[in-house]
Structure formats: structure tokens, C-alpha cells
Image (cartoon, rainbow, N blue to C red):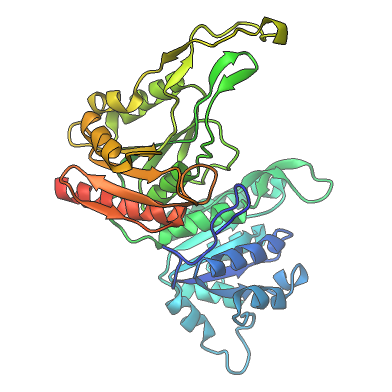
Length: 415
């Protein structure tokens, strides 16, 4: 499966697959983004029921949502044959997401109004509710809007996602009030849909991406790692309820929503960040492709072509994985990765033992669709007891889920 560089995987998968999402769309300019949200949720395997307010239909047509979900759009509460729609929709939803949520909607929801279908559904449901505000920054800053938002969280346990800061409607500049992007909303929906498990409220540290070791101020030694595998692991752990710190080297792939991002460049910087982060961590997943060597004595000025040395001296960098165990609490789980080109299994087992790992995930860089620069991976998961699971070629998001299944088993066994 080929994806655009940085494009998320939109195939049916956990936790959206076969779950019922009710998407409420209210009358704001950001309603056009809700079409993308409905489409992506559907591609992920969710059954999406769209409920539109009358005002929402002034911005985008119901047929657009029906076209991307394959399901009828719900609009009216007082219509023959629809008298109990608000009860049925409220009961069948696993999660309700209001995107965009206008200032008027926040006011009506905070007051418990049921003058339209969406309001009635909210009063009848027991499902968790996510609210994605979208409005002008001055409207969002108004004390009454803030009070309404606070009331929805405190009294009703609704979760607010956003608003973001960025460009607003035409000629309104930038500010707080912009609806967060659909891909980030999807991750929040996924976190709600995940059943409570062993990772809930755990502290997980994930490293991702390459490191860059400077040769001079404009050149460096690095590798082809995109960070996709580490990003997928961090996103999946966050959806499962963990507090995730993602320590990433430079990447052209957008980092996931949810995890706390710590950006680094060199192996030394990653080493420092890891030692700080793992002091109270339950798990470290070392998915980064850290350089083994760095230029010895990098030049302070750009090396000119006529001054280029005949060879470049290299020196080893700190072994982050080998030193991580001593910095972690007793009983914490340590997972490493091994990308090999020969003697794949033997080299992985040696690394598992030498680095005192609990699990190692190994893949053969010479196999098509595996390793750097692709959206898929084919790995073998090995543990210290000699058990192993060989996975077929899968999207990296799915590989991440399978690795976390092993992690949850280890955490359960140590509880």
C-alpha cells in the first residue's frame, strides 16, 4: 500500500472499525471540514451517522455527507417517521463528536436545549461527547462563551478538542477559535473508543526518526528514517490512554496528535532527552534510528570544496539503549528495534541480550516494503523467554498495535 508522504493510513482498523460515531455538524464556516472528517472516519471502518442543524445546511449540503458515508443524513426532529430518531441515534452511538461547534451551539448545549434533533440527542445519550469549537476569536474570548464551555466540561463531562490558533474567516486574521484539523479530531475520537486497558494512565516514552550528526554547520550524517514507525507507536499508545512523551529527530512526517513532543537533532541530544523522560516511565520504546557514529571534531565553518579532507574521522556516539535500563524504574519495560541486512535473527537475539531488553522488534531492510521510507513493515517480535511472533507485511499503524499488544501483556504480568 503506497501512501502520500506524511499521509495517514485510512484503512479499517482499531479502534474505529465497526464502531458507531455520531457526527453533529452546526452552522459555521468550518462545516466544510466536517465532510473530510466524516469521510476519513468511514474509511477507518466506522459507521458515521451525521446530524445537521438547519444552519449547517447553509454551509454544506447533506448530500455531501451521504456521499462520503453511504448513510442518510439526519436533520429533523418533528417529521413523520422520525419521532424517535433522537432516542435511537443517542442509544446506538459509541461516541458523539460535534464539529464544528459554534458559539450558539455551546450556549444551547450548556442550557440543555432540545429544540432541534442534535440537542435532543445530547439529552438522551449516555455516550461520551467531544466538542470541537469553531468561531471568531472574539466570540471565543467572550466571558459567556468561556462560561458555557466550562459548564459543558464540568457539569456534563464533555471533552473540548480545541479550538486551535490559526487563520480565521476571510479578512479576520489569525487567532484562537479555529476548528482543529480532522486528523487530530480523529485521534481524539480514537482515544475515546479505546477500551480501558493496561496502558491506561501509564507513562510511555517513544523515540522516533533519525538523528543528524554535523560535519560542519550545513552538512550532517544521517539515515533514511522517516519516523513513521515511532509516530505510529506513540499515537497508538496515546489512544490506549497512556501519557506519551515522543522524542523525535528531524522528520518530514507530521507528528501525531496527543503525545508530548520533544524535538532533538543529534544522538547526544536524544540521549539527554531519554534519560530525563524515562526517570518515571513505565515503558521506553526505542524506535529511533540513532546514528552509531558521528564526525570527530566537526568543522566550525562550512568546508569548501577545495579544502575538503581526503577522509572524515568518525567516533562512536553514546549507546542510548544500553544506558536506558539503568535510568529507568525497576520493573519498567524496555523495547528496542533492530534493522538488519544479514544474520537478521541472530543479530536481533544478540541485541536483545546485550541491551537487557524485554522485547525486540526486528526487520530485514532488504525485504520489499520493509524498513525506511515506506508505510509498511514486516517484522518479527522476540522476547526474553524465547517466544516470537512473525508478522506479515502490514501498515505500520497495524504493526504498532501488535507491538503494543505484547507490551500490554508484559505490563499485566508484572502488575
